Length: 145
Image (cartoon, rainbow, N blue to C red; front, side, top):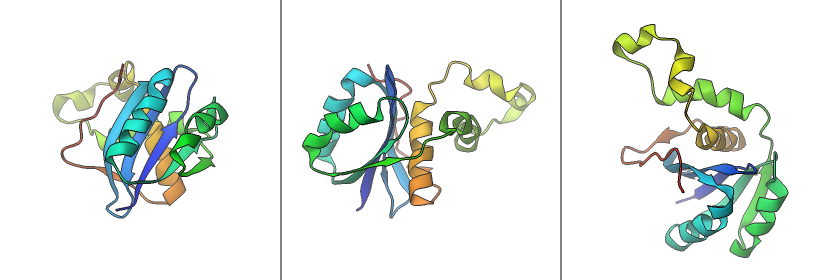
């Protein structure tokens, strides 16, 4: 297995995705408080075979990179321009609207969503130049406190 972590860094919260590139599957997708990220990645590293970490080059990417050096894994900084904007469209690819909800404007469904995990997914997809899907048993967390 070739598992990667992708992080959309932020000052207060970060999006994080754990995916297997060979299988093109996402196994974890969360939005987490920035202060908890290091411990969460430490836990993931203990239970998963992580090959690399991809970090978006935006807000606080250098700080996050320094915090994760302890992993002794390859850490790559990658372009994240417009990922938050693109995450809105990708959200509906992952979670299509069905039934009568289709009549309601799409923007209504994402007003209160944390799209940081989907932004992390887009960073990873851009890096790998592949579209990924969610595994069937994924527990999608929009916020981990």
